Image (cartoon, rainbow, N blue to C red):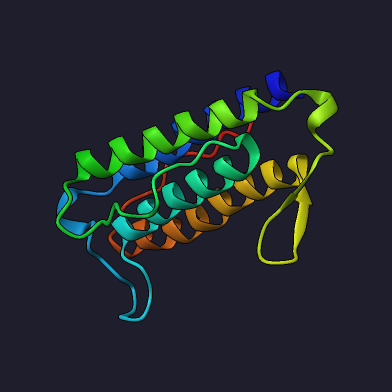
Amino acid sequence: MADELVQAWQRSQAYLIKFAESMPEDHYSFKPTPEIMSFGEQLVHIAGGTFWFGSKIGGEEGPAGEFKAEGKSKAEIIEHVDKSFEFGQKAIESVSDAEAGEIVPMFGEFKLAKSQIITSMFTHITHHRGQMVIYLRLKGIKPPQYVGW
């Protein structure tokens, strides 16, 4: 299972980095409305989620959310996203087929199998990347072409 998922994980990383590279640095603080995350914050949020989900899967703690988009350059944010994907990949690779059904505590009394957490990690990225399509379009930028295979 892990071998197949790692290939999809690497494609997801490459696709997200294309999004990150598509937005000019001076628009990383852009928010379509005041109450939502900026483009840069979306990327940092994705990375934070990836570190968190990865820690639940692999048992190794990731950064505790100390990285913030504010005051960071585009290059620093992209590097942080790349590090989160490396962490996530390491977590995915650590799960054997036999361990995929192992139940892990999540939010209080909520529990998921490791395989479900991996799926949630992918879904979280897809959800926020989908939001980022709108940010790019509002800035007149055509989003990267989707490739899901």
